[in-house]
Picture 1 (cartoon, rainbow over the protein chains, first blue to last red):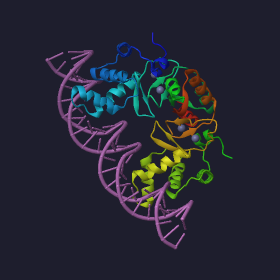
Picture 2 (cartoon, rainbow over the protein chains, first blue to last red):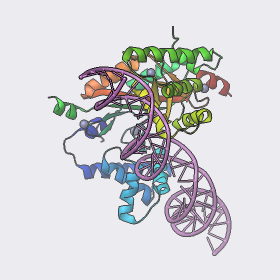
Picture 3 (cartoon, helix red, strand yellow):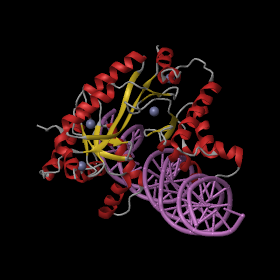
Picture 4 (tube, protein in one colour):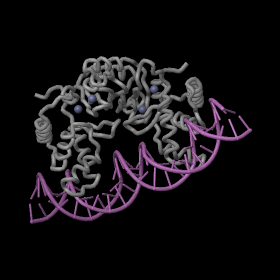
Length: 166
Length: 166
DNA sequence: CGCGATGGCGTTATCATATAACATTAAGGA
DNA sequence: TCCTTAATGTTATATGATAACGCCATCGCG
Ligand SMILES: [Zn+2]
Ligand SMILES: [Zn+2]
Ligand SMILES: [Zn+2]
Ligand SMILES: [Zn+2]
């Protein structure tokens, strides 16, 4: 079972990170098998790097990490992998940072949304559907048909807020 | 009195656009006078262009519009004006589009948030504080201290939805 | 008034992010 | 096998944003 992402992602306490990455990859494998998508070597490696970083990660940083191990890939290599992963719902883009982060959330009834700590850089995807409900009702009222949401809340996570308190 | 921005901005019906621009500029003049900020010629012109476009506008488009009339400004000219206007709260950045839009909203008790129509390109800043309230309570629960929000809801405005209907 | 401090702007160069276009290779089905 | 399609490689370029430096206008002060 996946724990609420909020806790793991924003927590500063240690966790079994290898297992965390492995879980994400096996979920990805399962999802792709089930949907007839091809999680090729590059795509899988990009996803793995994103999870390994465990923070919103920039495309060119991924590119550098890839090139450190396999030679000289060009930007399209990474961007195509990112496009695939986005499309498959395996990652999200953090628009306010031009960065990408892994998704461990079920989006049947809610859209992606994030708390992002400006101090430690961690981003937590939160799953509550309350925000979606309010947006839906506001949209309804305005006759607006919702397609996609970008919700990124910047601030201080609990741990960083605590250590800031003079 | 400023009407709720939602209606004006997403409405496809005509409005007195010259007055709309003039209002925005006079509000900006007042705010800057009051806060001891200098709304210089360039800054004012950039703000005017943003309002004239009445849609999220890209920095390099503004640059082109400026250059069409005054010669050859360089990117920093526009970006510095944009930084000033953002800082002053006179415009917002639409992160999902790397574009900028004028603000006609009172942000005492709520943070910027937008409905953006993918068909007509219009963006409406909505003022409801319900969304802020829910986010605040979710944040509270997680011990997260909110600093800034990026809320951009993409979809179809009422007018475009109506004309799409089969 | 003369002077120095500051802020705004011009200019050049460069960095950062993302995609277009086309060639090549790999995978999968008849 | 051979054909089709999807994925990847490769080169070039588009698009978005900032660093760094110098000049000049504005303003406070002696
Ligand atoms: Zn997600
Ligand atoms: Zn933190
Ligand atoms: Zn606003
Ligand atoms: Zn529309």
